[in-house]
Length: 536
Image (tube, rainbow, N blue to C red):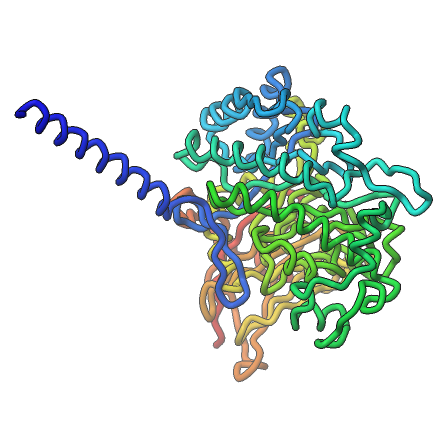
């Protein structure tokens, strides 16, 4: 009897230990998460603000042979986060049989290189196609059909109406997220992208018999929320078929709704197991015009259907624009359209230029150029540091401060316009004046024959205290408001850097020629200046 009692006692203790461990896992408050306050978002990693200074490797770089170069480039860039794909076809080569060895290898190497990770789930969609589906799905086109175009021919894009594919994707994604939960208690992985640029090229929607029957039926009432109706300019009490309610945009809206519902099913399956922040990326349309959906990837979260995606995919935390545009107005418009009270801004893919980095920092949670291991300007063999690497080098130690300041709306970015004209920022009782190029005294940059590549951001620390960071620009100020017209001067201008603790370290005090001729100037290499101003 005594042995039985001892056995029961041990069994009870083990059961309690397992229960406590399970409850702890379910209530882990330190996993990466997004928080929102006053319409602005902050990414928390280990319960601290975090800004993603990232780089995305090439689509075919998550293989053992390729990874050493990836890590070398990421360290040379001074990045803090690697975006790297996970391939469904590699993860589940046979139905129901999973191989996480490459996932574990990347986790191990990321920790060795002190790098955070964002995994990109390449599964049903990649650039609008199904090329990362496992072979056992690709060879069964009847069970896993593609979109049927208006002419009756199949298009190289998976149908969002295929429940078998959706369930298979969700099952695999859930297994993947479950693996991360068990294998990544250090929170190396801070977010996951679900699919890649989902949608369809070559057809506005699926015109198969199954899809057509749904299209001709009544619109789901879940889509007709006040927010969606307002953004899509339809009556709140609208009823009827897709065509009756949405007219010429019906095909596109129908496709966006069903692509989003499919992806939400996948995302929900993973989030129920491990609730990391989940997002999808977007192949953009022209943000300054209103092109028809046959001119871009239909079904993705383009700016005109963000509200549909929000209604259809509540388990996707945000939609993120891949920005390959180069026109200033177009890029700034995209940043404006995706920085919404209901959507965190992140740029998960872009060109290698840091031109719009400061604008993304001011409004968003992360910035990442694409294909960094495939671009010459990011190669660790280059003798000259790339412009983006130079930016990351000074910003990386203060990334947590940038995230805090962004959430508090303290950051004010500007870029040099094509006419080189000076830019102004109102800062309470002061106005910052940013001039570009090699300006000095009364000279202006307008007459210079050079590219408009200057940029700056001003961070307001106090009433008379500011941080200025920039390239190819000059900073000066003047009092406004009640102090307008008063004489003023720099009380102190310090050039320096931020350390890992968030403390500003002075390298030198600027005075004399460095401040007298129109204010302190920074050149091609980015600099951090600390200004203290006073009126007399």
